[in-house]
Image (tube, rainbow, N blue to C red; front, side):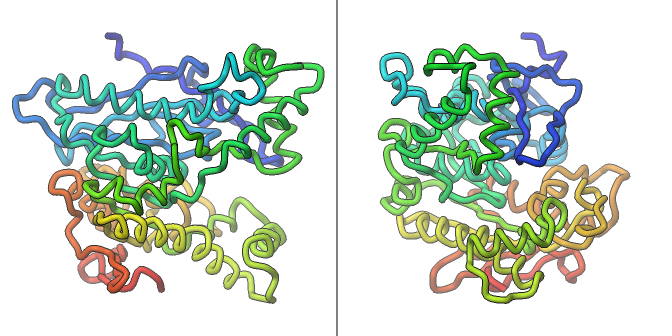
Amino acid sequence: MDARTWGPVCWQVPVGPRKKWAPIYPDAVESEDCLNLNVWSRRPGRPDPQPVLVWLHPGRHMLGGNSPSVDPWVLAAYHDVVVVTPHYRLGPWGWLYLGELAPSDYAHSSNLPVRDHLLALEWVRDNIAAFGGDPGNVTLFGLSTGASDVATLLGVPAAQGLFHKAAIYSGNADNVITLSDASEFANRFLTAAGSLADSAPDLARLDNVALRYIHGKMLRSGPVPYQPCVDGDVIPDSPLLAMGKGLTTGVPVLVSVTSDEAGMYEAVSSPKDVAEKYAEVLGDDGSTHEQKLEALTRKLYVEPAERLMSAVAGGGGTCWAQVFDYHPTLSVLARDPRLAHRAVHAVDKAALFHDLDGPLGTDADRRAAVEDQLGLINLARHGHPGWATYTAREPTAKWINPDLRDGHTIRAFRR
């Protein structure tokens, strides 16, 4: 085993038509041969196996990887757990379904990244004991699209038994599309290829430069649905329906959002873009800019979280709600003055991976990080994060804010 260097990340592609492509990891090797993982453990081979945390990274299924944009060693060292960070295929290398275009060659090309997740979890089951981890106590956690992947896996029959708890940070289970949607996108992708490719096998042979070029053309013409699809195979049914039928009854689930998720649009979009997004999602009713951001947070994050928790509870499962109501100064988003005091989407990543013994950050940063990390660690170690469950009758949540006397309060999940 050679663990001296980071393994390759999947090829990275821009997330928007006006976004200049720039790799998150400038020094990383990019390759479709990216199915590697990292393991972080204080005492490999120990006789008392510890809880295992498996992190699925964010990046809109187009960017990201398991290289150090976060520091899993913080969780492993401070909380004495084993952390695993796998890669999976992104963009057209993972999400382009070619089964309808070439059934004989690509009948099983749906949901390749989900299959990658399953392979990583199987590897953990078979090998993690050698690193001091307990294969019978695996918590799957992720943020943003990584969290949505966790939510999807809650509804995947083949994943059952491969993980035992789940923590979902700003993700949802609503992001699945139909197989016909996936096929329609593949047809549009082939059309956009023009003279570069006449068939699915031609697409499969294209190099990363050509696929990035076609991806850019697709971005300019509309959304790119790099999303899981209900294929009757890996994902036989809608994950929400599967949860509601009791597929995840024995898996405790923590669902967390930030209090101002859509405030992220302040940095990545103009007020005009926000207005257009609001009109697309909710119609145009004359609301102010701030009201639109609040409504988008509710519609795009809070309501999907409620649907997810209702499905888990409806299927006999147990879930807890959390709201992160603070902007850590160590978050890269804090460098943008428009976001410095907003608990926007993904800002809680800085708290989840904050070095509690390190010199960086403020006392408030550390208090928020302690609250955020303990919920995850308690879930992993004890099967519950430490506060009352979320139910339809009592939809309460733990709100994290270091300005409060105890660093948190228990109140309604919705404002």
